Image (cartoon, rainbow, N blue to C red; front, side, top):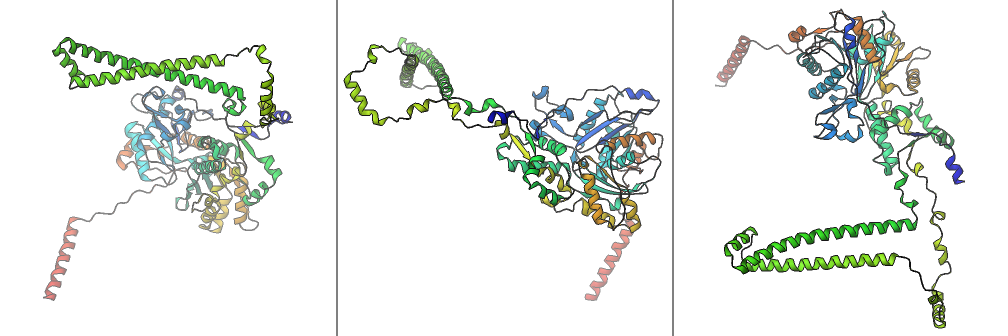
Length: 615
């Protein structure tokens, strides 16, 4: 029966892929030759993954971004990976061995570390094959966060204009670029965008093709928090595999095995049924090695292994004794040579040698000679005794051939055996049975399996119920209701006719049905709404930025030139259909010196009048 069950196919068992990123090749800048003007570079600067490529004019602009890599850096040590320079993106290979060294330029979804951002840009320009010397002679379309702080944009503009010498730049929001890519061309549309990424979830109302920034809302939850929550759940469930449940593996489970429940409570009730559990649980197979299992060895093999370890230890001790004996013998010969100098009367050489040995008197020399002589003698005795014991062990281990005549016991021996017969157990011969017949059957592969059941829906549920991880925030449904309530009824009807879902954290199966269920509960009776999922929630932001760059290549009203950067500062922004709203910093007007003098004169006069009244 055990053999038949072992041969049966495993149900719902999924091995971890543990994908190791391949280093990106350095590409050639072929698209530069497509036109007389430099081709724009499109950079989707995401907190999880950066995507870079060319916006090539023509009928076939290209299928996808040429470069996609994780937005992390690690500064290697000297000698590691052939050098001490920083490693970026796919050059890191597997992230788990370097997890403690990884650094990101982002705080949530906002780039704040200029030095690390420069490393990411260097990596992008180098692997895209930018051929211009000393600068990047290409317009750049760059994505930024919703309501990006002016300091972050100022830092980015300063880096691109001052360090790379770009001619012009345009900023836009990734989710609005995705919205731009999926809407019909030449159509000014309104809608409600729900964008969920690695760090944050945004709800963005769009009215007549422009972002209504006053009513945008952000939830500080995304794929990163879901992956950490899933890792904690599995580590608490399987404390024996604590180190094997890494963040990379939990991200793999989250991306490929999780789904959104349309009704969370009802789905949990389904998981209580044993049949439903057996049909839907995913068994994640951890890597293991059957050679490490000690219980498969027989008692003879274990005894042989102990003897080998004992012999190895004896040889190691003997080698150490010989090395110590040689060292002590050399020191003793040196001291005896100095003593011979004293006996021969060579006092000058004797005192010089005594000073080199850091000794003060001949008595001290004689004391050291006696101690070393006894130590050398004891070491020789131990070595001889160890050799004798080793020979005895070898002789005892040889099988003896007893004399047949001695096997015939005498009458006295038989009587002595009969006296001790009650002391022996009758079941003694049964101990010599093969070990394999009494060993229990242990399935090592099943021990290294993670049963992922309700965790498949609990981890992604946090964006709807942040209280699951102790966050005091509103979920997507409550925030969506709050944003809609800020508009009149007719505007609400307009917005819900185009609810657009984008972002990598919106790719769970069942996400669209869950949003439709939440809208059905909050909207009036018999009202209509429409939910649309992006054609590619991850890459549509880059596709939309590429389409926008090609449509506005000659429109100077949307590009920020270096001259405008120098005149208006790094925080300056030109608005367009996919951009943030530009809110310049308004400093308080400084009062003139004459007005300050008049105010001080009035103050002194008032104080003088008060003093005279008191007098």
